[in-house]
Image 1: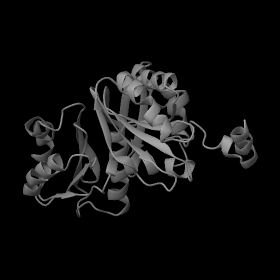
Image 2: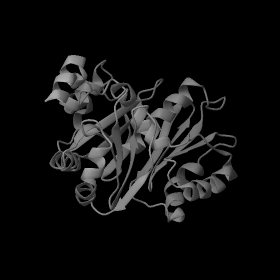
Image 3: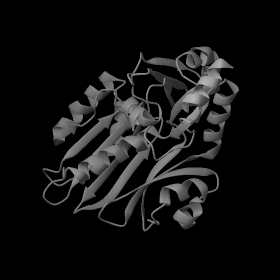
Image 4: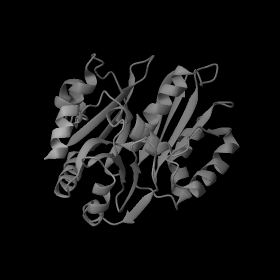
Length: 288
C-alpha cells in the first residue's frame, strides 16, 4: 500500500503506458528497470535493462516460450519494475515488398486498429502488421506476423505476472532502422543502388535498391545460425543482380560473433560492410 501511494503521488503509476508506440522504450522507462526478450521458434533469449538504461547479462533457454517464461517468471519479475517486457518475435512472420499502400498521416495507428484501411486486399484478419515506406517512391516493406502468436505471448506473460509493454519483430525493426540511416545519410552509390542484409538469431531478410527504387527482397525466418549455406541461398539471387560497386550493407543482432564473422567473410567478396552496432538487437528494441 505504501509503495502504491508513493507511485500515485509521484505519477509513476501512470508511466509507462502499455501501448505508447510513439515514444521510445528508453524514454518510457527512464529510471525504471525492464526486460527485453527475443522469442524464437524453439528458444528464447533475453537481457534486462537497469535503472540507468544499461544492458545486463544475456540469458538464453531452449524450449517453447510458454515453458521458458514459466521457468523464468520469478527471475524476470525480479529484474523489472512492474513486470514490463519488450518482446521481439522471431518466428511465424514474413517481410515482403509491396507497392501503393496507403500513406495517410496516421497509417501506423490505423495498422493497429483497422489495418484493412491501410492494406486493402493485402489484409488478412489472422495477421498483425508493421509497415515502412520508401521515402522517394511508392514502394513499402510490410511485415505480417501470426496474430495467434502475439496473443499467445501476451497471455503467457500475463499468466506469469509480467506485462507486454511492446511486441515487435526484431528483424523488421533492424531493417527499418538501417534503411532510415542509409537514406538519411545518402549511403547509396551515385545511381541510388544498395543491398541491405539483416539477420536476427537465424532469421534473414535482404532488400535491393536499383536506380533509387526497391526492386526485390527475400525473407525467411528460423533458418538457423549453423547453416550458412542455407542463408546464402536466400540472399544469392539478390547478390548476383548487383551492378559492380554497389554498396552491400550487413546488420546482425550482435549475439553470435561466429555467425557474423562467417557472413562477413563471404560478403567482403562483394565489398560488404558491417553496419551493426554492439548489442544491436537489444539496443533497437530497448532504446528505440
